[in-house]
Amino acid sequence: MIYVSEADPDEEGYDLAFEPRNVFVKRKDPKSDYKLGEELGRGKFGIVYKCVEKKSGRQFAAKFINTDRKDDRLAVEREVDLMRQLQHPRILQLYDAFDDGTSEMCLILELIEGGELFERVICDDFVLTEKACSIFMRQICEGLEYIHSKNILHLDMKPENILCVSRTGNRIKLIDFGLARKYNPKEKLQILFGTPEFVAPEVVNYEEVGFGTDLWAVGVICYILLSGLSPFMGDSDLETMANVTSTKYDFDDEAFDAISEEAKDFISKLLLPDMRKRMTTTDCLTHPWIKSTKRRSMAVLDKSKLKKFVIRRRWQKAVNAILALKRMGATLKL
Ligand code: PIT
Image: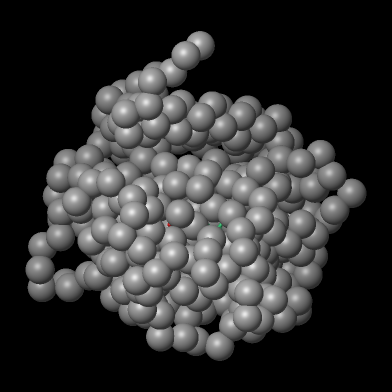
């Protein structure tokens, strides 16, 4: 059994993976500098492999991104530009970037091998408690506070983008700045993307977005982590988005019987229709549920619903991967 909840994550060390670097995109084949290894994961963004820097023998992760479409290159250049500005222990670091003129660009990233947070949490040897949840949520808020302090919006906060540093510790890091944007409060920023289950009402309504948009998603993630239930999930994306804009949700399910009032208070101060009224990351970090983890319950939470949630998302991911292949012109022989 792994009782991951006890230790302060920072007792394991709070260092950056490597010294801050001023990364620029190299116009050559990444394989000239790095030797590729096993696949670590794949998603809409592309495929991530383990790799070794030839000159130093150091291990990294290599993310290959398809850049067939004209805008794809610009999007990756933007991701590199934003990641270059982010150096924090709660954010996956960028080490190198390549564009050799083929249909793929490559980012060399810090290697972490703990897998996705939710996948890890549902393992039978992982004991999930409310205290463990609040420690994870604190780290998510710390990472996001740093991102926001640089005037950057993540805009794709969801469970898949929270990775564990190791299989046994409780440190996490935020990944995927593919949809992130620089935020200028004087300019109105509207967006048309994201995952329906996690997007805020202002995104669905195509209204102005801001720091609060990321915090809505933090509220949804916390709701799911504690209960295994997705607060706005409908039978279709359209229904989910209608549920989001109604901003109606409740804690009525029996899954919440064991959950503290402070935890529910934390969620309810994030899932507010007006993004300006939601807690900021700094407010989150001083909220009693996050701040005083010592008093948090060590009672074991029932993970059966969370397991179902993760299995459902695995299927969704597989379907998305097939759709992405089809868009690239692949035909399937079944
Ligand atoms: C791993 C291990 C690791 C890095 C990653 C995955 C990276 C994933 C990733 C990073 C991004 C992004 C999408 C996915 O946009 O060390 O399993 O910046």
